[in-house]
Length: 331
Image 1: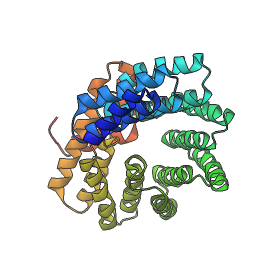
Image 2: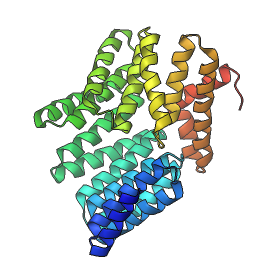
Image 3: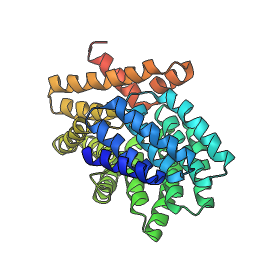
Image 4: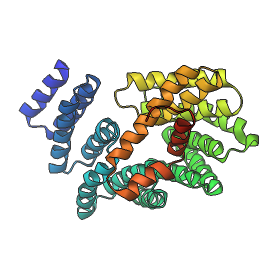
């Protein structure tokens, strides 16, 4: 912490605003790990304001990423994200910054997808991929397309999802884009899981394991959701002991990381695996935690359409509510 503060003071003294942005981002992340949530938010907002003032697309991208993951998503304030992103998108459009537009629209697509606004999410990811292609960012294009495939899978359009993922895998291999390739393997595994065809589950598990070989453990966001898919596939294949190995890692990451991404999903898959192993008390504990997170997010959604979308359109949320009622746990 003192080193980050010293670096920030030095860059301010030198008048290097680009490095000041970077230092504020680092400081904000350190503060969130120390549990200093308000201070972290202030540091990241300062970073964003400076990046905006000097039109640093990279600086804006870093600050927005950290604000979304470590504050808005962590606190379950998805509706607030739209109000946060819209003026940034408008400014990027006014300045015709195609790369930044593509990035911010992709972030908007994430949020739309997570709360069950699937058709709008597809539009956002398509626009993001087109913007990234125009500026020659193959990585940006493939990331958007990969996430678009997840939306198609959520809609039950497994053929469309697989077609997109096959193209992403091919292009990622051609250009050596391991980030997009790892995502494609993980999302393909999830597509197979969602489809639920017993004949494909082993292939899905193999794809998930390949994704884990590529995605660094330090990437809590991508490594975490890939572990979810692999754990769920093991459970579906009748391998609860192996599934528990993966879900324990998921829970350890969620407990260590101050900003676990969509923790309700992690708690729920762990609960299902524990119940399969007849560890009922622990299973109830994690199911209750999943339920409380789902309802916390729901209570933050004042817009009725978004509130209902979160509870009704998102499959895992429906399953959490049904399991919670089935096992008679506390409201």
